[in-house]
Length: 163
Image (tube, rainbow, N blue to C red):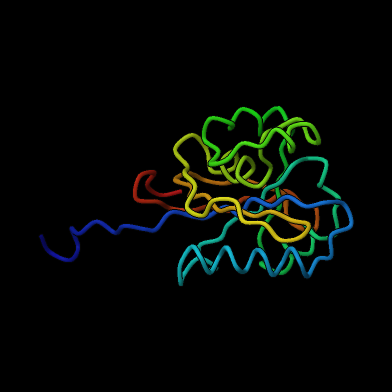
């Protein structure tokens, strides 16, 4: 096969799912996010296309600060949408369900944003007041920017083709 005919294989985009208690310091969320990105591999920060969370955290300063820090859009989901991901969570939590209406915020949000073909690449990690997880996405991932504007992060993948 000549060079022109070779298929270019892109690595899938990454979605960072975050959860936190109200009032969690932005620095705690950002440090935890950096730790899970490091766990995902050397190029994870370049592949990060979106931060996702529960809709009750749409105005949480720590979440907005994380989206700004990584310069990616921030998207939130209703608890019912995150609950639909329960079968794909590594460790569903009844405690989290009692507080939020879903069995997992960080993993659930990452998977919801990544789509049906998405998969967890870093399962839930915790700090004192926050959780983070990463999912691979094989589709175009849409969100709202950290400034509140509509935004779309287009990603090519080895399965989905051009965005």
